[in-house]
Structures are given as structure tokens and as C-alpha cells.
Length: 486
Image 1: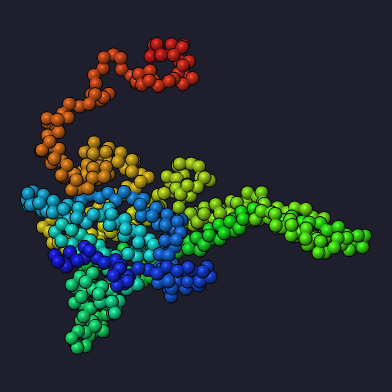
Image 2: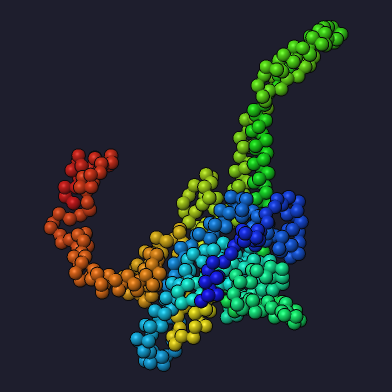
């Protein structure tokens, strides 16, 4: 408990000693990015740091990562695993319910929506999320681990697992208290303590409490930022912005030409010193942004303004190209070129698929934790395939299933409304047993078309009853009394 209490207050930056683990951001020139992309395997770390840098400085890149991280609703339900035939008649209902409540409390402690969202954003940005979880009976905390000191080493129960480079703590032993007793013990076995020689073969430590989520689960060796191919497109947007800015600045400049009179042979008729005197008088009385020059040629005024809308649209085109390259509809991000809502609904389906595939990884990780609890009956977490775009349709789908008595849809319907399994059980007990909403309060149905008896004056509510005006067709129907015989 004391160890966990320390971990709950993990030091992010040591302000007193000016020590921290923060990433140092720096400007990446475009030619350097091209070198990274030519050999991504050798530059895995650099590409990951570049992605982190762009997430900080580029609003478009941050918006892309956050969009996929926020697209799902992160609602979930708890379902039983398959039971063997002989168990159906041997289940102790009280014990079964007790185990179910234990799993619900455990999952409620995980705070899955918030933690899952952070893991998905990190995995998309860096290619992989490494973390260490710490828990007590009523607390749960996931500590992110820097990808510079961790590597995927093995797969357990279908989930990725990583090893931690203990050399990371050399010279930074003060960080060990933020990683727990197991890390402290493993490090000093590797390093050696009290004059004893350490075991260098223990450099890579496999934490039992590790969590690993990989953006591209088809490649187990390398972990690249998920949108690696878009990094140069971000620089294109910046380049076109700079060009447009330069053009806008040029449009504010003018040049005035002072014509010097010349004779038939082209020689100036005015003394040079006198011409310079008049030139200085003009130059000293004009606004900033206006240039003056002397010339024997017949020139009066120059303007650098441009009326080409194509030049102005290049930034917009670069931004749209960026979203198309990410396979994201520009309409989602505010583009004015896409116009149909049906195209939008179809275009977000692949986006939902990317986010949901990562959610399935997260579910497997936490189901492995539940499985290791060695409970008498098996249960697992299942995230709903519900996004911000299909949320309403998903609720209606589960509602219809519940109305027809389809097993499982009642729990999913409640989950789709934003209630986790703990809320469902708690609110059901509160409303039915304590507040008695179904028997003593709210036991009379509200008046509606479903509960009201017919008195011969039924039909659809009229616009007059709703205090709404009729359109032209309705006015014509009313004046001609065309509904008299209906």
C-alpha cells in the first residue's frame, strides 16, 4: 500500500533538482525527414520523436491523432465466457452473481474509457504504447513508459508484452521509486550492490504488470508512427503557408519611379546633386512599404498585388491532400469542398475500424488481467462498436433487440446509453428497491399515443394544435376542405 501511494504521486518533473523525463523538442529540417524515411528501420527512434514533435507543433497532426482517439464512445459491457454443457446444471446462482459483481467492481476500477483513450492516442502517435499498471483494492493507475527504453519481446495470451532496459536507470536511480519494488530489485541485481558484481544478462527486464498496445499489430519487430507517410505532407502545408504569407506581404508594397528628364542624346538635363535632393525629399515623406527609385525611363508606379485565386487555394489544396492521404474525409475536419452527408457517413467507417481494432487489443489485455484472477466463473470485457457517428443508430439497434427479447441486448442497450455495468446494477437497485420508482413513484405511464384510448378524434397532431404555420400545400388543402371525407 505504501509503495502504491508513492506511485499514485509519481514525479513527472523534479522541479527542485531540475531533473525531468520530458522529451526535448527541436526543429526538424525537411531534408532530414527525407533521410529518416529512406531508412525507417534504422531511424525508428528518430521517427518516433519526430511524430511527438509534430503532435506538439502541428494542429493538423494533433487533430488527426485526437480524432481517431476520440471517435469511439468507449462504452463496454461484461459478458460471460462460454460454459461447458455440464456446468449449466451445476452453477450456484449466488456464487455466480457474486463473481459477476467482483468482475464489475474490478472493471469499474480500471476507468477503461479514459485509460483506453490515452493508450490509443499514444499508440497512433508513437506506433506503440508501453505502460505499467499498479493497483490496490480500490485504485488503478497506468504509468506510461518511454518507448526509448522498452521493446516488444514476447506475446502472452494473444497480447503483446515488452521488456524494459534497466540501463535506463544508470545515473538516474532516483527514478526507481516511481517504478515500484520489483523494478528496484531487478535493477540492483543487474547493476550490482554493496560491492557485488551485477549480472549484465539481466539488462532486459520483463515486468509482470506491463501493458503494450501496438498500432500496427501485423509487424512485431518495428514500431513506427501510424501515419508515417503523412509527415512530409505536413511540411507541404507549412511551405504553402509561408509562400502565401510572402505573397500577401508583397501585395502591400509599391514602388514609385521618379523620371529624370534627358536631352536628345540621353544625357540628364538636371544636375545629379539636384536630382538626389528631390529624391531624398520624396523618400522622406512616404509610408513604410513604398519604395522610391530614380530612372531615366518612363515609369510611374508598380503594384505587387495578385488577383489569382489559384495561388490562394494552394494551402487549402495541401490541407485537403493531407486529409485524403490519411484516408480521412476533409468534411469531418471542416472542408468546404465535400457536400454530401452520406459520403461522410461512409468515409468514417474505416476510421471507426482503425480505432475499434485498437480497442480490441485493449480488451484482450484487460481480459488477461481478469483471467489471472482465477475466478470460479469466467467473464470478459467487450467494447461496443459504437462511435460518435453511429451512436444513435447503434442505440436503436440494441433497443429493438431488447424489445424482441434478444439475449444480451438489454445490457448492451444500457451500455450504449453511457452506463457501465456498475452503473446498471447500482441504479437498478436504487430505483427499484430503495426509491421504488416502478411501484410507488412514476408508476402511472405518461400520456402518449401508446397509452391514450381513441375517442374518435385520433390521427396525426395538426399544425394548429402544435402552434405551427401551414405551408402553401397545407393552406390549399385547408381552403378546399380536402380532408373532409378522410
